[in-house]
Amino acid sequence: MTSRVDWMRGCATALVTPFHNDGSIDDACFTRLVQRQIKGGVNLLVPCGTTGESVTMSDDERLHVIKLTVAAAKGTKAKVIAGTGSNNTAATIDFTRRAREAGADAALVVAPFYNKPTQEGMFAHFSEIAKSVKGFPIMLYNVPSRTASNISASTTLRLAEAHENIVATKEASGDYSQVMEIIANRPRNFRVFSGDDASTLPLVSLGVDGLVSVIANEMPKETAKMVEHALNGSFHFARRIHYKILPLMEANFIESSPAPCKFVMTEMGLLEENLRLPLVPVTAETGAKLKATMKAVGLT
Image (cartoon, rainbow, N blue to C red; front, side, top):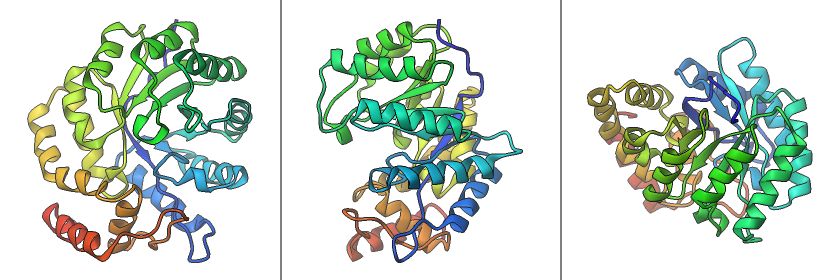
């Protein structure tokens, strides 16, 4: 039976990682950003995901960011779901263990990218990880646009039934039929999170339990409130926020994320617009569009 993890519900922020001009991690800025999230009502913090540019960081850097998140969340209600996945099963197991030792409350484990495993390979990969960190909650992360492979609904459900510590999935497939199949057939206590800001409101109506968000980096209070209202059935209030911030939800993906998000946060005075190659700052044209969008949603 799937382990019950009551706190895994609501708005989670896929945290950006701020860098100095020389490419090093800006610890002080990162801590301020995490504190801003918590103050804004976000109770689930996700360091070292796609939005955090984790694939450009060394294992030591990733672990450092996780430890910074754990330290900033200490003494609060916030929980840390650390991104620990890779396309190397053994390396993922090792790093997930290190994240648990560092104080993370759970792991977000992305589907293997580039390898393009079969569904049986997916099952074996996640099974080995789950067995190697028994008792440690795992959220699967399905994002075919990034990984070039999809964790099918049947594989997700098979993993949920087989391993009690595989407790959730972040679905960023964009396939509503797949999400509904998981929701309709999931074991008791298994959670489903939206992996796309703009799809979250309709997906909550279908039964998802929360959102792992990009826009919450920019607008934590509004995003957390939208998800809270939706989960409580107050769709009138949730829709009001959704349509207010929808232009920015969409604009965050004009270019590869998190470049647009970092541009907006720079304009807000929250960080410096530094990314690690191969990502680069947005073009002037995109910047102009983002400035107009910021004005439209009330950020300027």
